[in-house]
Length: 147
Image 1 (cartoon, one colour):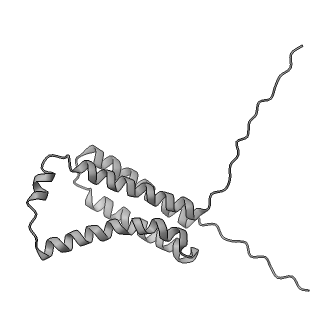
Image 2: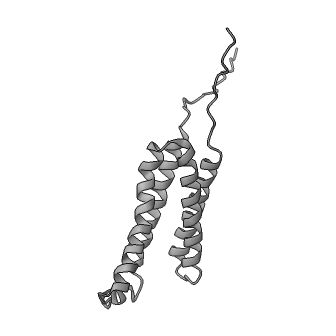
Image 3: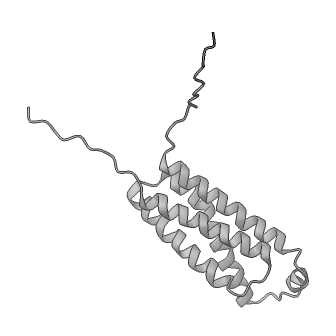
C-alpha cells in the first residue's frame, strides 16, 4: 500500500512597501556608480590624467557638479523613505529620468565593456525606480456612511 504525499510548500512572504523597494533600488544604483568609478581608476591613463588636473575655477565647478550628481541618489535613499507619497512619486520619476538621460549622454563614446555593462544596469535600475514610482499604490479611503 503506497501513499502519495503532497509536498506542496508555500513559503512565507509579506508585502514590501513601495518606499522600501524604491529606496533599495537607489542603494543598488549607488553601488553601481561607486564600483564603476572605482574600476575606472585602473583604466590606463586615468590616474595620469587625474594627476595633471589644475586647480581652476572651472575645475572646482566641474568637481562640484560631479559631487552634486552623486549626492542626489545618496539623499534619495533617505528621502524616498520619509517624503510624503505625492511629492516622493514625482521626485523619483523626475530624478531617475534625469539620470537616465545623463548616463546615456555621458557614455555615448565609452568603449570599455565594464562601464557599458554598469551603465546598462544603472539605466535598468533607474527604469525600475520610475516603474515603481509610476505604479505607486493608492490608499483606499473609506466612504463616510450616512448615519
